Image (cartoon, rainbow, N blue to C red; front, side, top):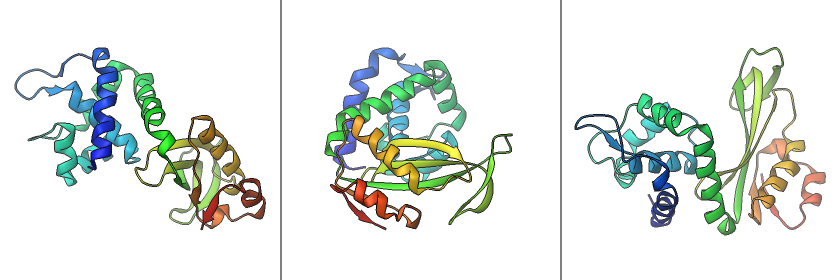
Length: 206
């Protein structure tokens, strides 16, 4: 974990340390909320989408786990789930917003991509992504910082929506959050003359 991320994690914890109890769980294996909060912030940084994925990441990248405060054992995914349930879903959103507020002005290069969300809901549609192929469900159009992978803007659409038309709203939301990126890396789905002309202050790499 780079020193910049560690500094931001420390700042975020200082901001929210009075909002959570000191420990989670009973007995000698109880985990400090400081470590749990750090892990959730790291989850945002790395673009990890689930508690299960977070546990897998921490087990693989032991230095990041130690930086969060897990020197010996990594919590089970249900431990992270209990934390989220205890503090409420809006708490993680607040931490995310605080990360962007503190770091967003430094963002220069962003990544834009769409992820398939398979779902059999009545409103779902058949769509296509290069990595998933054809699927039934929705798409998450995600704009994130290229260096730390913090999600800056997300739009969810039906699976059959094209990627390109989502870019103006993604970048608008990003600017409104105080970020002012100069470069964008996208896939071919965002290769549109209209988009590049409308964002003339940015450089694009497909």
